[in-house]
Image (tube, rainbow, N blue to C red; front, side, top):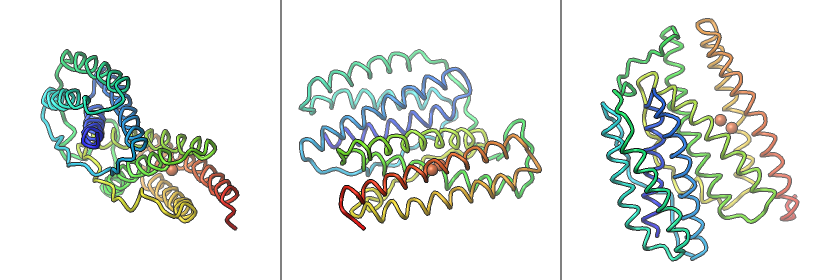
Length: 278
Ligand SMILES: [Fe+2]
Ligand SMILES: [Fe+2]
């Protein structure tokens, strides 16, 4: 079952990358399928926890550099067919059937998708309609690489914490933070594809999500969010004179981080209260 979870993790990311690459109405469909596959991932994880089987978020690298979308779609299809066969290993037959039914629908839709020429890997570092100075371009490039990984990391960490907690108060907050990071990841991934610098985020180290000290984790997390805000502010300033829309976008992201900080403070206070920590 552990092997299936890893495969679903990989195909979720690959499908998400496909959505970033697409510039047509395939895009939304691929985003939706990526969301469905992420949910499958969490359900299989839940089944693993219930059965007491140990697992991690380790996975293989996912090669995504393609010149046409159909090549990626074929690979996604291969992975899905492989997962479908391995679903047999799930004890929960209802869950296996549910996932299998989604997979067969997804595969059918993928097989009918029209092909697209992909420009997500050209390295040209220019976004259509935006003219940025080379300093602003460098700042944006660095930001996108760092922050896209960071958002993926946060998704995995909060997902892990949520999977291992049955505290409804905490889980509500973890879920909001997962959703928000998904949104940020989608924005940044899309920009990377537009700039021709799309890349899959690297694997998250176990120590980061197998959190033993929740208080310290949340305190550090709040500091990190404050830093993320600063990064956004700096970037908004760096691009402000070149492009107003982009500056406004990074202000918007920056302000969203305020809410994350507030939520994490709520979670911290609640956790301390429940566990009698000063
Ligand atoms: Fe963020
Ligand atoms: Fe955040």
